[in-house]
Length: 315
Image (cartoon, rainbow, N blue to C red; front, top):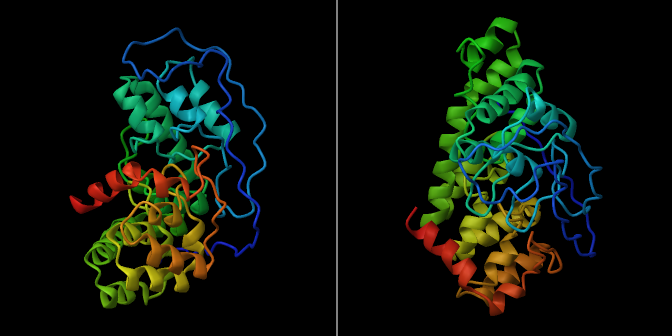
């Protein structure tokens, strides 16, 4: 059985603050060139205080870490560099940055570590996830699943024992049940998003009618999109209306670059009808994405949203 969580409904007409550039590690600045060349190890890891977040933002089990306009957190930068022993694990402990954050290329920090050819960082990231699971932190593991993080069940310990066996040996029934539910949950998510793409409203309603339907509606795929994001890109007005009115919390959930469904609606052909539905359901016209853009920006600059639409069409 999957633990369900509902985001609190908060009304606030103030614009969400623009995220500042991520606080650099002492020697981790300018690491954006994701190179496979290993750099000098970093001796000290520092963590800056976390900024105040918008009350309109969805609740999260992780800290709301600052990310740059490309969607990269401090963890993305750190994942591309070599470090002294346990430095990256210490960073994860102190900053509590979500492993599920994806940049504009849909890469998690783990993906970056693999592309940068720093396997020890991949190991440290997996070690942190196993650490959270071993401590019985179902809330954070569930949050990663909700964010579309796709490297949970393939984690192993130092001896190569799978995460499911490690948790079973510890006798943690709740965590074991959560891990066991992941394949079915991911299958349900893909089935739901497939029905949304087809515009099959009855199938969408059926998929969300069971226990845990609200959780399923809120989950994101590996592109960072919820069912409502997908519905807007597919321009199925009846599906958009149903999701927006039944699950209004989806109006505030951003994609990998914190673009809301209303941001998407401004860049598609059916802008008038879709934006009207979303705004009537409670979508905020002042919320900004990671690039500091409000939804109206995409009315005049549609290319970015049209590219996302093309991605969905070939999915």
